[in-house]
Length: 159
Image (tube, rainbow, N blue to C red):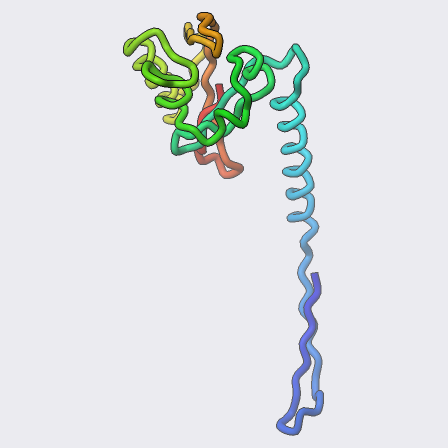
């Protein structure tokens, strides 16, 4: 990146020129890598391929930020119907939630798993079940992992 500026005297005549250059090669390489990784992420998470497992996630405030095609198929709920809703309570809960859990005990255990992941402690193989859109009880093993920003700060949960 190069910037140039002109120095002028009191009558407006150009009396000097200043050029400032900055090598941004390193920043460009990092941005290209980030763009490539984001493309890979979208390709994997949002792929309708049958080998991609059901995936959902929340941001740091607890709102549903991810709901892939396999999760749509498993639950019967479309991505656009759940994104932006509170993961605990609106999406998964005991009352009028989209994916109703069996009871308060299930909700409490689910919240503990999510909060543990937000705290940096990933879980593996937590028994998890909910009622899908048609009222059928779905059982699965839940894996909850923290989502991190490039600087390592935890920004949500990925299940």
